Length: 183
Image (cartoon, rainbow, N blue to C red; front, side):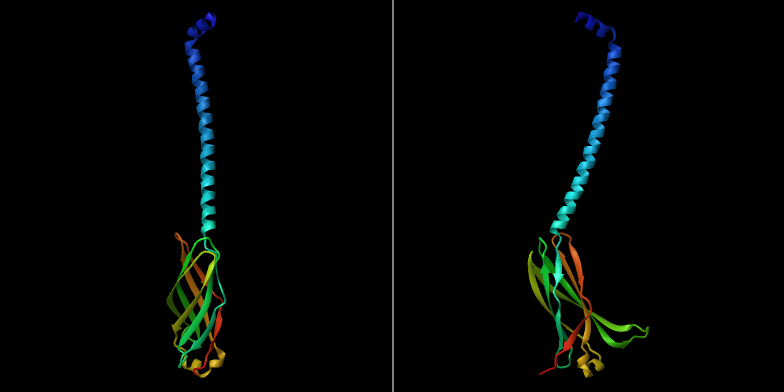
């Protein structure tokens, strides 16, 4: 053993250089493994955030709207529809927009259409449904008043929001409201 200590003492510079190379290689390996760990952690954090967003996203569907045009002069469009929330968190229906078509064409040859918006506040709990009854004043053309058998074509757009920054829009396909004769 004393010979080995003499040899280390005689070659101290070489031993120190060799240990520096070993420390350099180990440091490089540590940097590489730490970088792999950082990438995996970032990927897992991103996946967890996506999974949370999917788990808390509202799953909203709307039932078929029932509608009719009422009033002595047929100036009220009454629509009733159900909102189903199959998601994990509540949603709030913020507004309902009704676009209805009038007979005839405008100056550019486009079909005349009027859009009206209204507030329809309804909070729907997770796994629940709510029926929204919505009435809005309309201005049917005189020819609409003369021929109530053809109905009034309309489309609903429902805007809703949920927990966090969740926002959504649901559009119905074009529908036809029947005219209810005054009694």
